[in-house]
Length: 318
Image 1 (cartoon, rainbow, N blue to C red):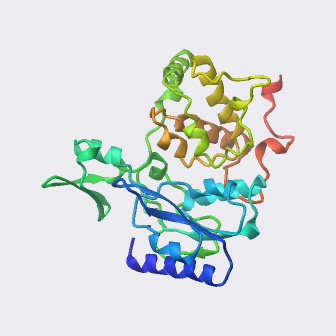
Image 2 (image 1 turned 90 degrees about the horizontal axis):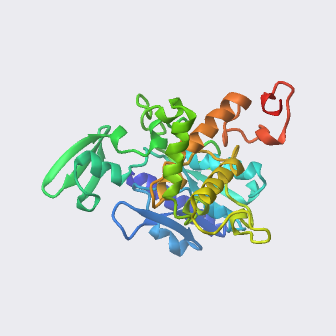
């Protein structure tokens, strides 16, 4: 990211603290691991020099607004802004407590995919840079270029909202969708028969260790106490058995229907690499088809399961 953008960001954040308009500033700082950033919760202007927005800022910072009940300035990409809209619609946060700074996002690079495309191990990657629409990779003394559609997170391949949909200040930058002519491949699983789909998910959920990373990183999961933690009565066993894993994942899918914005954080943090976005994307497509609803794009449009229209499909109750 150009220095002028970072300078402008620092100036805005400093001004907000100096004028007493915010108590916290949510942004990113450089991680301790290569090609990683970590969330930065600045409590004063003295914390701001740690702000890092050069690259690899995949984390959805709106997650932390569920815990920070105060006046907060937050840095958001286009997809993150949709999470803000969903949280506002659900009454989880208040607009008057937020100062939203829009961040230009050129698409998020997945180092694991970069390594696969470059034919090396992730630990061998020494440098990843952008150049003229391609990704330049350095491994040892060799440099390789790979197309960005082979290195971006899936959500970036068909990004429809690169510019934040809600903001108070918009940082300068290129807000064109990162991959305009390339979209993710169609999900072939949907074309298969029910027994094949069942077998696929049975295999995937068998690997789930129920670490709850997918739930904990999800901005749309905000129940004060998750049903999997209830023990009077105990609806779901604490053990990662195949049946209870099915219950957990499908129940969570239903809970976030209408508020999940397909930010992809659940799949990105899963240690077992379960393709959870196959479920989330199918749910999003069904909501679009059945209710003409896309989560996180319209602050005023009613949530689909809280309203009823005469023309809504009713086949499920016959």
